[in-house]
Amino acid sequence: MAMVEADAQAAGLDWKRRQRDMVDKAVGAKIARKTVPIAVLPTIVDVLAVGEAPVFVILGYRDLIRFIAQLGYEFPCSPVSTIDYADEHAFVILSYEEFRAFIVTLDVTGDIDEEHYTKTHADVRAEIDRGALRNAREHYLFGGYMSQRSARLKPAR
Image 1 (cartoon, rainbow, N blue to C red):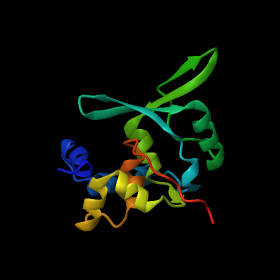
Image 2: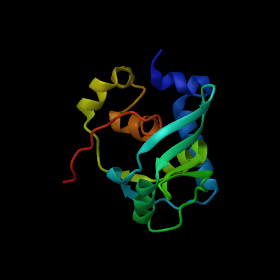
Image 3: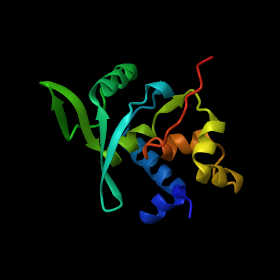
Image 4: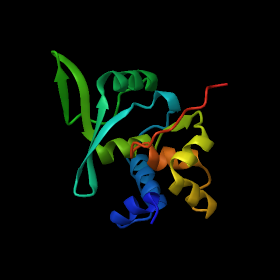
């Protein structure tokens, strides 16, 4: 079974339905749609799970600050905790679902190297070939990013 489907099946939903549900939840919460470049998405350092279910996401503090500055408004996710190193904030821990629900509301501009992504992640290529996905960018933005899949960004034109 493809990894793309495995995560969603573990949750009892197909991934497209999860995506729509998260967007509906975010729209219901009246989170404004904001355009951000793909290169500004903060790096996910780790995802902490209970069993197979992701619960927390750990982001680099500086990455998150740069991302929030790019947004130009208050960040709607409340930190669960911070991890400090040498008397400075190094990492921020957020609720996985809250962060993911916010990320899917963004209008992310820019592109990934589709050829590299589908070679690196053969399950994504298979999903595209069978028509379950339109392209690798769609997978990265609505699944791959949150599951820490590597992607090369295409330079902005």
